[in-house]
Length: 282
Image 1 (cartoon, helix red, strand yellow):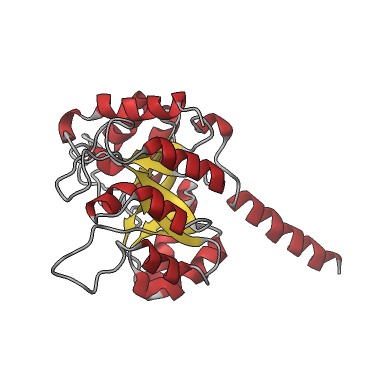
Image 2 (tube, one colour):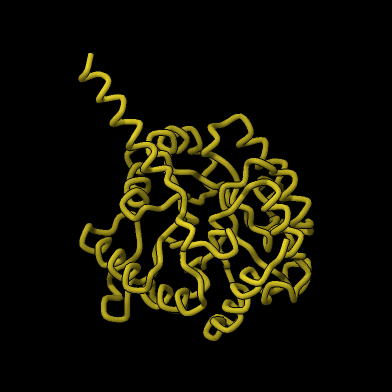
C-alpha cells in the first residue's frame, strides 16, 4: 500500500515539475515574451540566442533546422539532434540567461515513435509548447501532450487562394479542432498571418478565448499579403488591445516576436517590440 502511495506521489511530483510555469524573472510585464529564432534565420541558433538576449528578452522559441553556430554549421537545432548538440544548446542558453519555451513550427508524423522524438527533445530543453500544423496527427500528439504535460499549439499561415483545402488561417476552424480536445491542445495565435488573411487579430483572439496556448505576435504595416512587420505600436495590428485581451483571458505566453522584415538588421526593431511590452500599461 505504501509503495503504491509513493508511486502516486512520484507521478504527481513529476507532473507538477513538468507543468512548472515560466519563472517571473523570465517574464516582461507579466508576459513570457521572447523571440522566435526564425526572426534571425539568416544567422545561426547561437547568434539568435545572442540577439534575443541583446533585445532584452529572456525566452526564446526555436524552430527545426537552424544551423547551430558559426563554428558548427553542420549541426542543427532539431529533434533529431544528438544529446551532445542538445547540451551545447543548453549551455549557450545558460550563458545568456535565456530559457527555451517553445519549438515550431514542426511537422508531427502520425506514427507515435516519430512524434515522440519531438516531445523528448522539448522535454530535455524544458520547452512548454510545441507549435505545429500537422492536424492529421492530432490524435497522436494529443496522447503525447498528456503523457509529457507539454502543450501543442495549432499554428496558422495565411489564406491560400489556390488551396481552398487549407483552412488553418480561420480561427473558427482552429477552434473546431481543439475545443473538445485536452486543454493542452490549443492555438498558436499568429496575429500577422491573420492580418494577411484579411482578418482582425483582436477578433480572432476573442474567438479562441481560453484555447490560446502560444502566440506569434506581430504588428504589420497593413492588413494584406504585402504588409510587413513593424515595431509594436507603430503598425495596424492594435497590439495594445491584443495585450489587454491576452491579460483578460489569463494568457501570459509564451509569446514570440517573429519579426519577418529587414532580416539582417532587425535587432533594433525587435528591441523596440520588447520595450513596448515592458512599458505597456493595461
